[in-house]
Image (cartoon, rainbow, N blue to C red; front, side):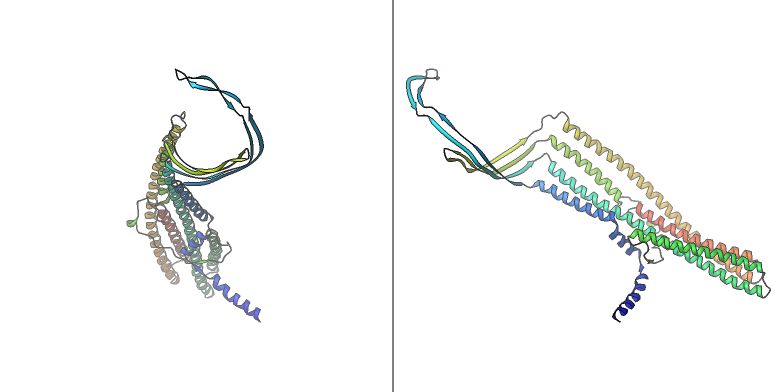
Length: 448
């Protein structure tokens, strides 16, 4: 009984989950969580953050400890024989000369043994001036972090555009399916009237077959529209990272479209624009970074060193420590063009990126202008399509009334229904194109 109750609860909850209606914002959130490129862009930002912190650490002292221990079996002795040594006195010209007397030297015997030798110490190094290399490197790391952030924004924009297009594809497919169903309903109602006319001798069997043929076409349209809906939902599931066989439901509405008067003609908010600006700035700092190798470098070093080892005649020779302070100054004089050519190469790269930025900005401005024009045209096209649908609907209504009164043929009435269906499909198609064109405009203006 307990297991049966669990099964009943699961079966009751399953339709609730299957019928969940997802909004465009929910689909975008799910895509952001599941998209591997966005996750990779997050990791890139973290990597650049750590690189910037690493570059900032070069401003501070570098503290290190060194130790070395050696055991050596080497040993030996050194004997110096004694004897009489002449005593020297200063001469008239200051050169020592023998005085004629002697002094006795008893000799010297030295026994040495290396044995265990140890040395260790702590050193602190502080750069004073590196030609601007440290500060420039830190700025370059921060610019790299900014580029990583803009790359994340660009990836999010592409994902958001893909999700919105996939979402709009489902909306379009569902509306096309609705058009096919409504078209069939109109034909089915007509079939009832024609069938009644056949029974009463007011219509022919041929008229009934003509309507039946149109119903068969409508059923085929419904089948194709249903397949299109399922395919569009699979595409949306794939885009947002869900299993493609998921039973997903969405709101069959497009967001509001801005009017042409509020269109933007700026590209400065686009991630591509900001990335190009950062790349040019990075190249400019690369010139400074390479030029720093041609400037003097000054550093200070302080430390403490302790030595212990080396026995002579049984006494340990070294068993003490000492402090030391050093100032290092390096001035490059001539490197046969190694450094100067690096500077020239970096400068040429900077000019290259400047030209590429100008060309890309012109292309983005052209793209934005085209997107705005396309959007204005599509707004007008939607207005025409909606007006055409109203006229087609009125034409079908009038034609149906005249057919019922015997003033119009069945062929003309069927033709008016076909025109109504085509006008309805045109409206659905233009509304879909309007939304996708609007998305293209938002992306071109950096507002997606």
